[in-house]
Length: 284
Image (cartoon, rainbow, N blue to C red; front, side, top):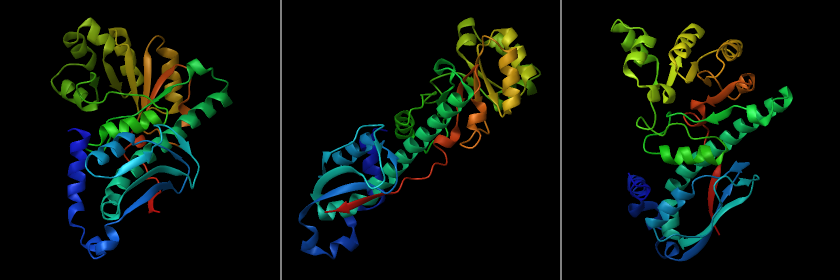
């Protein structure tokens, strides 16, 4: 779905053309006014494409817009604009609902990236050995592209956008394979070409499983729910493998997973449970 179409659906959901409260203001709401959107806490901005999509569905004009990834202090004005008061009052909540979410994702992601960099500095890890941070597919339906943009604005990286983007074997795939009577490694060796074996990301639950896949020629292994100690052992025993850590990693524990030899850390919490940022739209 195009973002402009999504904006249309979201505005229709909130019945912006049938605002019975604002209708009582009569002529008071028919005048034009300026407005701004303010952050009540430190923020990293994301959501420019959403603002532009809302503009296509309204007569609201935005005279000053931030850039993706721009940092703001608490109390800063993010956006200036103007429009009819009636439309500003009607669109306000839908506009802010998405912006609060995207800015929340960008701001939280930036804090995670900073925690990783701080842990690397404390451990004396060189910049080229710092694990990169990635999102997952644990996103809100139909808002994935906006959330991915927010993760990128916060300084993290693009994982697979969708199921067609990359081959990733996870626990349920493995369960089905093993129930058919084949081992994980035997099945992959039989059904994947050499190039697919080099490209696919394969999730494992144990070091023994990871070692069997390495021997098979798998180059990208996802360590699922490994403790930091288990990750350290995997790094030692799996040289030459691109290791991704996922599962159970959060803002409190991520510093423990900043280990040379870990290429990537993916976190569902970047998108699935982020707190919306405190933004407000004020008519001037």
